[in-house]
Amino acid sequence: MDPNEAARPRADLIREAIEKDEHFEYNGSSELPFDLRFVLRDEDPIRETNLCNISELVLHVEVKDFSEDHGSDYLSSIISGHLWEQCLAARELGEPVIIAVLGDDRDVNDAIKTAASRNHRVDAKKLFQYFQMVDGFEANCIGLGIQVWRLKTDPFRRLLLRARKILEGGDLSGFAPRPAPGERKAVALSILAGDGIGATKAKNILQKFDLCLMVKDGCLAELEDCSGIGPKLASRIRENIEVVD
Image 1 (cartoon, helix red, strand yellow):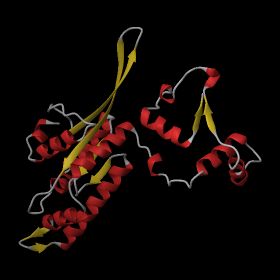
Image 2: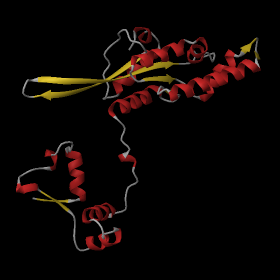
Image 3: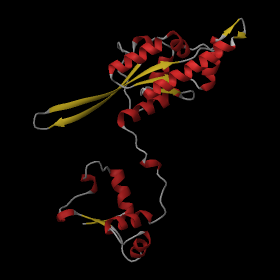
Image 4: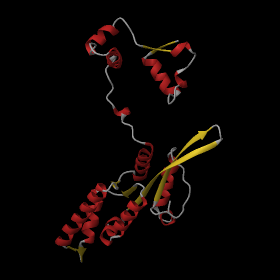
């Protein structure tokens, strides 16, 4: 966290969210080009030399919020050109940057109305100009690969989750529709058998036969010995497919 960000009241909320998330560790404040810096370190031990090949994936986040009187450093930084300078710096840095806006469309709209008002009267021309400016700025940011997040409800937990998925990579497999009983085996058999065995024939075969995993070359092994297979996943596989020694 940048020292300027660490001095803001919202910094306590960010640290609190980090403490509640087992995937993150707060490493204090230091001079940063943006408010927050997330780092994913991947350590690959090299047994022969007892050294570690350490690579880092980095993600920067610039946080923008709103005041109680509908003011906004997000809007003001767009109008002043400061956020343009930050986006330019982000592209020169060559590392991914996110603009996290701690509000929703209504907060942005209220901020625009406040900025376009004088003596409790709204300047319609300026109002339209600011709306166009914000929409255009966000669209161009997205076009340049700079995501703009509007986070109103529980913003810091959601920010952490998104940052983690960007660094670790997303996985939609857990959201796939659950197949009907036996459907997985029927599809697997039709794939293994090749041409001529469709879903219907596969189901007919499975009425008298079953699919199973057999230990390769007769060696003693467990599913957990396979790379990327932990106890929970191994247990799930055993529940669905018979394992034969």
